[in-house]
Amino acid sequence: MTALGAVAFHVLMAVGLQQSPSLMPRPVLKLIVEHPVLAPYLHPEAPGRVPLVVSDHLLEPGVTPSRFGQPLRIVPDRELRTEPHLRILSFEVDGSRAKAVVEYKVEGVQAVFDLRRDAKGWWTVVDAKVVTKKL
Image 1: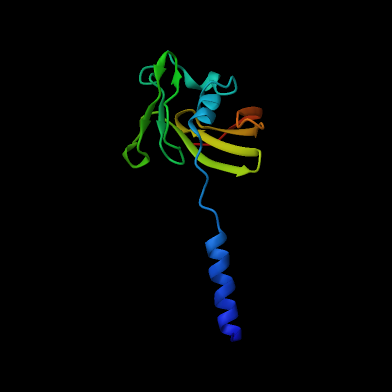
Image 2: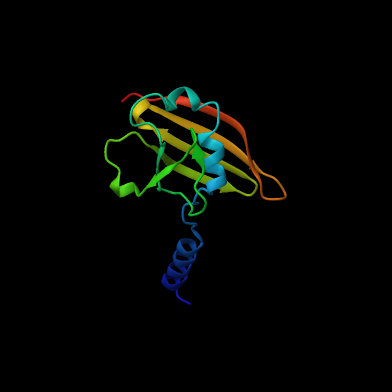
């Protein structure tokens, strides 16, 4: 194998081993939308906030959770305009740990969730914090 061939082989292997972004399971979305750290920002009493709209960006297909007594409204990311919506910015899994970052732009906040998965596959939130962003 030539030096160039060896380099090309290693580049192709590295590209092939890169993982695509993880998709957030619907049970994790349920934990996030029901978490008390987000509650002060959701404002179900405000017009247009119920049902809670969630972008499908980085979201696994599956059963749609509910919030405020109604199923979440999952909308394709490309179809969302200016209506208030929750958007998953990232979901990174490392073994039994995961980190999720979600944005609720209408309130100017991002929330970071640290999660753990037990031996049975159940996720729990072990830490959550909200960061106010400048709009």
